[in-house]
Image (cartoon, rainbow, N blue to C red; front, top):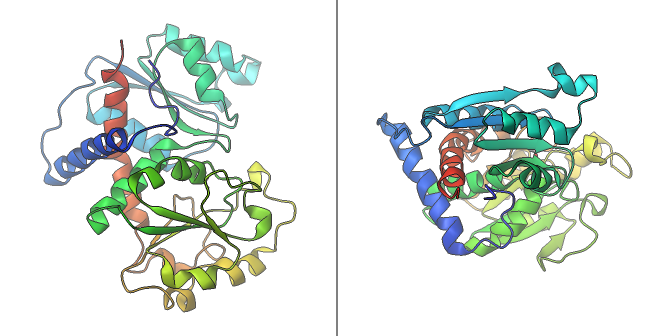
Length: 302
Ligand code: NCD
C-alpha cells in the first residue's frame, strides 16, 4: 500500500472524498466532539529530514487525536549524524513497528523510495521540489470552507514557482477540482516548461483584478532560487502584496500562504494579518486534513 505519495492521477471523486473526511473532522474539532480512535494501537512515525513547524506538528497532533502512538525521528540528533544511510534509517523505523511513515526529505523521490523499501504506507510531507500533497489538500479544504465550493475559482500562484513543491501539488490536483491556475512571477522563478497548459504571467498587477485567490510563495533559496534573483526589495516592489495591491483586488478575493512567511518580501503585515488573509485557517485545517489522510493511509492497508 502506498499511503499518499502524490496527488498526480487522482480523480475528482478521490480528492473530494478526502476533503469530505477532512471537513468532517474539522467540524468535529470545532464542536468539541469526541473523535473516533480509528488509529488506536497504530504507530505513526514522523521523519523530517528538513525543517518544519506546521507540517510536522499538525501530523503529530492529527495522529494523536485519532489515538495513535506517535514516534518522532529527528536526523540531527540521531544516528544519521553517525553516518547511517537514509535506507537503513527507513528500515530501522519500520522494523520497530511503524504502521505509517510520514516523510519529509530534500530528495524528490525520497517518499517513493521509502515506500518501496519499507512496504508500509508512506505519506509525503514534502519532497524536494516535487510534491507536498497534504498542503494542497489543506488549501483546497480551506477554500471550500471559505467560498462554499471550488469550481470556477481563479487562483494566482505568485513567486518562486520553479522551486516550489507546493505549487507542483497544486498544479497536480487543483485543476481537477475545478480551480483555474495562473503562475505569476519573475521569469527566473517560473518553470521553464508548461506541461500543465496554465496561464503564465510576469506582471502581477495585470492579474490582480481577475483573481479570487492570491497564493504567495516564499523564495526558496535553499532549493536553488539564489541565482538570477532580484533583490528582496526589488521583488517586494514588483510582487509583494501590500496595501496598494490589496486595493486592486476584487471585493471577495483572499490571500493565502503555506508558511513560513517572509514578511516584507512576499507580503507585508496588511496582507498577512488583514481581513482577506486565510493564513491561520490554513494552519488550523492542517490537523483535520492530516487526520483524514492518515486514516485513509491505514484504511487502505492490505
Ligand atoms: C512549504 C514547504 O516546506 O514546502 N511549507 C510548508 O510545508 N507549509 C513551503 C516553504 O517551505 O516555503
